[in-house]
Length: 219
Image (cartoon, rainbow, N blue to C red; front, side, top):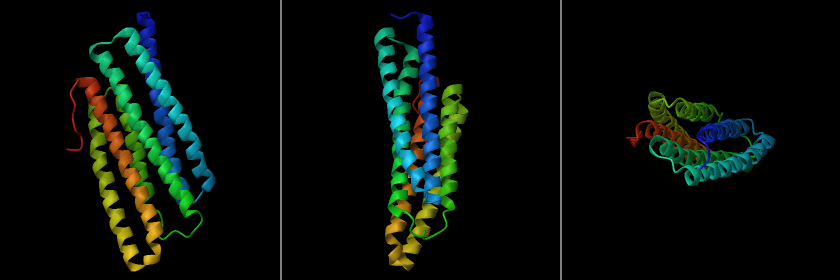
């Protein structure tokens, strides 16, 4: 078994790697939506490149978790910390995947004229990005109240998604030629809504880490 000091160092490095992965995910959410709003195809391509970095970090963190379990046989809170890390990186990886999905929409739409100014989607994305950041801040600080606040922000994202759905539906009904692009924009809204769900999942993992209790913040 590795020395206790090395073990603690490994746990700290694990946390730093998760934060690095989360930082890349946050940036990619912003980059993906910004590339759509500005119809910046080069920026959309950058999303794909960063996703590869996110995937590499996920594999590295998985290996660290498995090594710590195998060599240290952690108990109680240390075991919850490693189990939470497994869950958190899975959620972060999915958040990254949804950012890629948004970038794919940017490429599909290309330079064609947008059917409406993109105001709500960027605002929705800012809330989602803040949720991602706050969920990771809660993880580092083991802050249960901040984790619960992320769950409340999820309601705001759901409200945006419903509003965007209604607006796009009206546009499609008024002009069937907009259906393809409107469907793509609706797909973006859905992707952001799913990212918010995963940020909420991370917050639930934080609560489990601190208290040992599993709570559904979407109830």
